[in-house]
Length: 137
Length: 396
Image 1 (tube, each protein chain N blue to C red):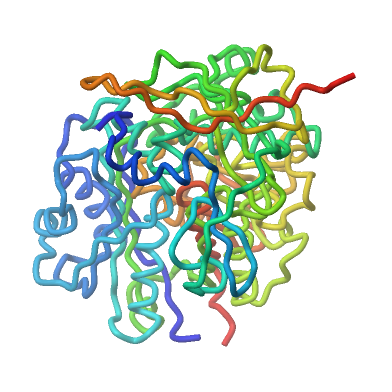
Image 2: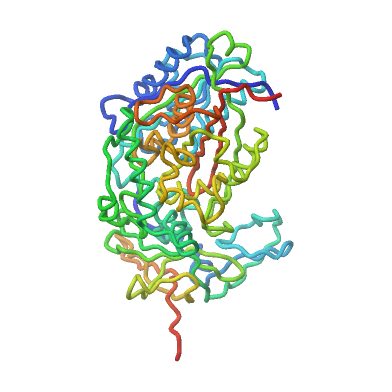
């Protein structure tokens, strides 16, 4: 076991991982992430993929120092629980210059970033991370 | 409601790094004590429920190994799992077997050998709790990271500080110093906790429970049999059980554990108790302090105090002996240790001891109400069990 990712699995999930697609239930209207084939709230199997808002607010956050083997060089990892309005998501935070700048309700936006490199094939994996929205003054 | 059920025997191994024994020998340490304290032998047991999470230890089917070593071969046997609440699920399973009238004497055994794997492997196993692909593998969210998200949300909403969290660790280490079964029998001070390294900010090494080997066992009996066996049964007044979403992001609130709150309300209702301001009903509590923040949330999820006031309880020393309600006089998961599958069984064994005034010197609660409560959480609020014990026979 390690933090190695599977190339084929990543490929199959690319719509979700790269586009930030959630599933919207046609029956109860709830949106959830990651998408599933059945609604975890009402049980309906009538769902459609919808692109989630790429901006949200931090509900909570942490800075993880103890990282599992395989990704230890990335320590520390900033991590956020983000309210996207229609649903919530947990994701890595990026472009954090100072951990003290992280605050509840801080606005963040999705951005495509490298997460890992395949050890053997050298393939680079990208995921959506969230960065602080720069306030224009 | 089913038949009344009593705890008639308890056993508890030394917690810690137990490379000196294998899993069956470790379980036997507790089973043997339980037999002796109940004055029973293996042949008297009619049902065996073994809780073990495993994965990090060598035996993939531990229940059969444990039961054979203890001379229990032939008995109905289960291995149950509810993550860190597995122990409580084993007790509940055995309780249901007796309560339903299936059997008169049932045993719950919790055992875990986490040190059979290297620490990083164990940490990774725990990190995979939940919906691993979405929260662990892609994104590296570790188990302490989940609880750190709760801690940050709690602290920013209510103003609790890292010092307040450390007070939980200080208290639990203090009581573990009186518990010969505890993994860490030493007191710590505030600088020790505050200066320990961050694992997942705001949680530090001393906010976290350790990797532990250990076992515990309880023998449960029906009213009729309990009367014959002992003058001092400890009754199970009620068990509340609930579950939470696999994904953390599907939860509604991050300042408490919804599943624990649902389980608590269920347990109170079944026991005929109100679900607010509940500390007054109990002499002592064991709560799931896998991280210090979890103990603070437990005070609130159990209704000891209102939302946002949990951290004040520990800050003011109200969860020491003599305070509003003494909590984790065993040392808790934090310092007694957290052998995942054994923890819930250990809580019931510990509280039975407390109620019978048999706890070690320095950590015995004053027993007035004759009632105690155990709060055991699996995962990050994925499973929750609340068990209420009492010296008085439950009302009809």
